[in-house]
Length: 216
Image (cartoon, rainbow, N blue to C red; front, side, top):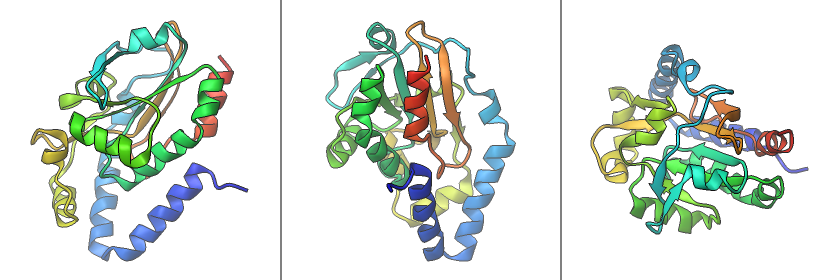
């Protein structure tokens, strides 16, 4: 039996934590708890709310507009931090594996991150993604969905120690990121289902996304 995405991510997280020094684990856990306590998850776009329209470039520079996609059916809109994040890569691969079922349920899948188009292209090519990967410069769209936060100083230091250069990935020095979030948006532009979490190791389960599409 194939593991769920949650099981795969937990195993990935457990292995990662086992390799990290205790103070690094404590730093990352504290940052997650601070973000959870901020109430950002609760303030983000809710089920029943109209989804803000947007136009963003895909990895090849072609502009993609939400309202145009909605003219063809419901949209699965997934916000991720970037291709540098191993949990994002695992999620994107899982969504790609289930893409035929997502599309079979009438959905159009798009993924959005603050990465520059060049970095989005690298992500799409490396993971062999067959759905649009959009670049949200300055997190403008993620902000309209209530998902944006500024990475605290302590995890910035940890990331730098890991060789992660967020300013280079995103083309700015804001250190702003979106919460991991996935929305199922109906043809009428209303959010029908959502997953939003302060913990970057937790992601929407493809089975739940497909079930949401089928229940519309």
